[in-house]
Amino acid sequence: MTEEALWTTFLNACLINNFVLAYFLGICPFLGVSGKLATASRMGGAVIFVMLVSSVCAYGINLGLNAIDAPYLRLISFIAVIASTVQLVEMFIKKVSPALFRTLGIFLPLITTNCAILGLALFQTNKGYGFIQCVVYALGAGAGFTLALVLIAGLREKLELAAVPDVVKGTAMTLILAGILSIMFMGFGGLGG
Amino acid sequence: MSFSENPTSGTDEFIKGLWRENPVFVQVLGMCPVLAVSNTARNALAMGLATMFVLVMSNLVVSSVRRWIPKQVRIATFILIIATFVTVVDYVIAAISLELYRALGAFISLIVVNCVILGRAEAFASKNTIGRSVLDGLGMGVGFVFALLCLGAVREIFGSGTLFGVQLFHDGFQGWVMMILPSGGFFTLAAWLLFFNWLKKRKEAREVTPKLELVGQAKRGVA
Image (cartoon, helix red, strand yellow):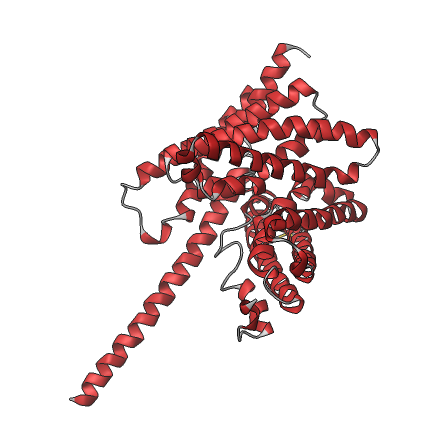
């Protein structure tokens, strides 16, 4: 496994096949938490961490399940691991930064039902990545998710000041923005090897 | 438990998911599969039916064991129940049609984290009787299928000029490639939401005007 391959994996997960804008994973927090720039970047940080931990765990679980020849338990074990990781992060943040805990509020437990994280665990298994590649893939996916979230939050903050017709306000506007961003991200397609 | 004694009828539990509380257009839940697999009407229908099955079955099981689940571990229990049925669906679809299984890809497994299902388990099935929960699951499921079909049909017609694989236009039709690509999903959903917002606004405006007319008539009557 060369260094270049790892870099491609990262770019692939982060820009070319961005989890939010190309795979439609994690749309719920994308629509829900993207109102403010500060909240969005913190949410992104939490998601990167959960992704890293659950990616490593998923790699281990997959090895174990293949060893005992029980792949049908994969989904259930993955989701159990993700749920407990989220619980861990929640306790950690509550202890370290109560202010951040209050800002994130309801969205922390919602990371459990963030499809980006389960999607990551499933994709890395399907692609048969090795350990290092899994970690890089998780980092790339997390960075891509954070990038998309921060971009849209910045745009939405600007839009607060704009005169938008009544009918378009809210989710519809965010979706149109996301569509335009998604077209822009297609431009990264040429980067992939 | 006081929730289950409310006077709404069984049909109402079913109907509300179709329109008034439609999971996609009104509650804006479960967006990921809606956007991802709605590039053709056929994929959309298959995904909708799979989700509906999981929704009904998980509502059934959750409401039947709701008395024995301690409050602290309820979410974890719900997710495990849902994951079980999703594994079933995953293997069933692979057995029925391998082509469909490849088209839907990881999104079948991702039904586990569809917020509609967990949302209904938490908000409805854990507080209501088995019969009502199944009706609620059916209603929400049909509403979800309806929403997916709305998106899938529009994207397939514009993107490849077909509907359920049947050609609609003459041979020279150039597909609008963007509708098949991810951005098309965002735009189509935005357009549907706009349409429903507009309908709602118009209805509200209509409800206000007759009242004003009534007031006017009353005044005239007095005079």
